[in-house]
Image 1 (cartoon, one colour):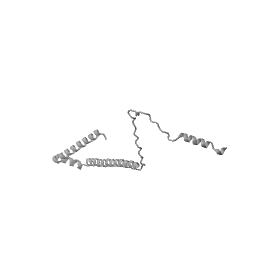
Image 2 (cartoon, rainbow, N blue to C red; image 1 turned 30 degrees about the vertical axis):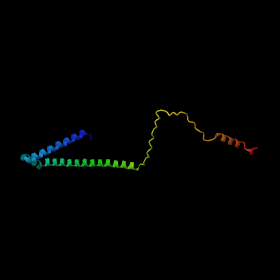
Image 3 (cartoon, rainbow, N blue to C red; image 1 turned 90 degrees about the horizontal axis):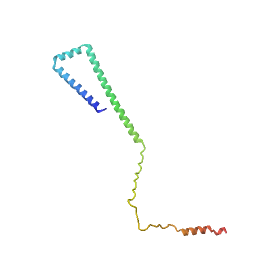
Image 4 (cartoon, helix red, strand yellow; image 1 turned 180 degrees about the vertical axis):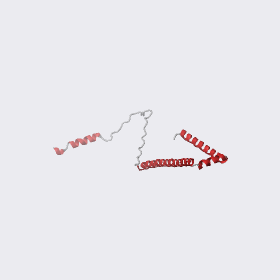
Length: 139
């Protein structure tokens, strides 16, 4: 509900309350007003109208209160169902965060270039291959 609507409703409620208090004070202090109100309630038509208006107001107030509580209950039930669905959902493993490596600001320079030593002796490998290729059983 927007804020200006809340302000208007509160202003109306304050005005109604102040008028009600004012009328009650007049009723307590004015004998002629008391007689007028009592005569209104003694007549059947006005008494019935007032009674029906009060009954409808109480019924409407009860209905709107019930509807408001049902709406709140519905919202809470919906929130609970969403929470339970999230609880039932399988937990997703988080993927590791891959950091980026920044290139060095200036390249490494050394005085002489590195030379890698070979891991295997290629001459020995070549000789062994020739030895197996010259199989004496073939002759």
